[in-house]
Amino acid sequence: PIQRVLKADVRHEPLQRVAETLNADLSTVTVTSRFIIDPASVGGNLALRLFASLLRIGMEEGVSHDFCWNGESRAQWRLRLGYVDTGIRMTDASGSPQQILRLPMTRRKTSERSVVRLVRNSVLAA
Image (cartoon, rainbow, N blue to C red; front, side, top):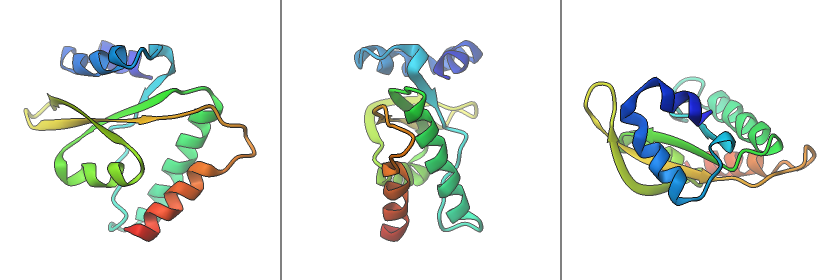
């Protein structure tokens, strides 16, 4: 949950600004920056499947947005999955600039599998 991330470090304040501009309820926003997606690496397909399951569960639980921050080299995979660049930057713990990305999500029923299909199509596109 974004609330836990915001409490961890003041440098995450730009995430809160983005959420506020979206009028998002902070209790429905998640952050998945530590989940690294790189289909070219060993186990990349498994990582994408896990990520699709994570998003599907989030949709079922009413998550409205997922945020992440990435350097430009890793941002491309999130952008292919439907994330949008917010135009806001922040620095990570090492002082490197990071793009803040967001994925708008809608509530889904358990039987719908659109996120899994989205990830599979993204893998094929990669």
